[in-house]
Length: 79
Image (cartoon, rainbow, N blue to C red; front, top):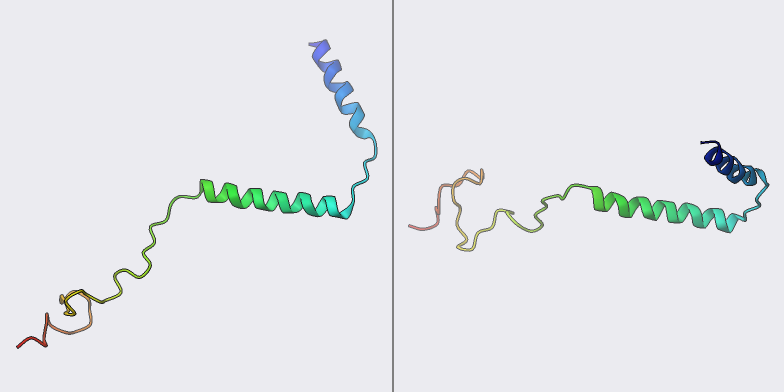
């Protein structure tokens, strides 16, 4: 246990030195963090069931099925 403690202490002792980073490096680190978060969020997010251009009230035969809520009866124009 003492051996592991000495290795960990010697490792962290070297981290006390001052390190100068440029604004460019800080900016790139922020950009990488944001992009990694976006990608991780996309991968973890539950899938969404999105319909685009479907169920917009138009039918192939051009009639109304009566359940759309428009107030028309089913195929009024057919006499």
